Image (cartoon, rainbow, N blue to C red):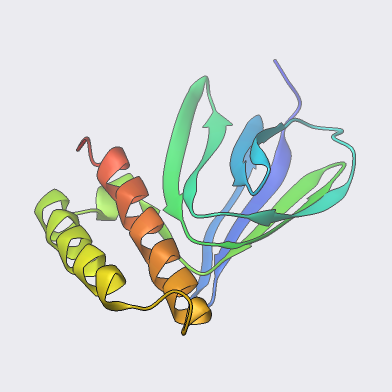
Amino acid sequence: MADKFKVELVTPRGIVLDKMVDGVIAPGVMGEFGVLIGHTPMLTFIKPGIFSYLESDRFVKYAVGAGFCEVLKDSVTVLVEEAHSVESIDKNEVSDELVMLERQLLEINALENSAEYERMLNRVKVVKAKISLAGGN
């Protein structure tokens, strides 16, 4: 059995997850990365996507927004804009939300308002991650 380490998943609303786990897979800006106990310390950006941790031979997944991840030899702290467990996702609600966000995204001029366009694009990515977790397309 692998040694466990502490993982914390934190949003502006508070701590979403605080557990001892066997491993973590996170959506980094340079691609997904995995962490096991004793990983080299690092600080990296998190992009919207699916964050998962390994516990008792099964992965538990969350849809997460953009943020940061600090990896130490015996802990991982993930600070993100938002995090959603599979159980908290309503498939119909997120499908409707995706349609609305994609319409809004089309109305934004990316050249004139790049910050707003990037913010909306990240929202679309989070909603797509939620749909994926809920068993959608």
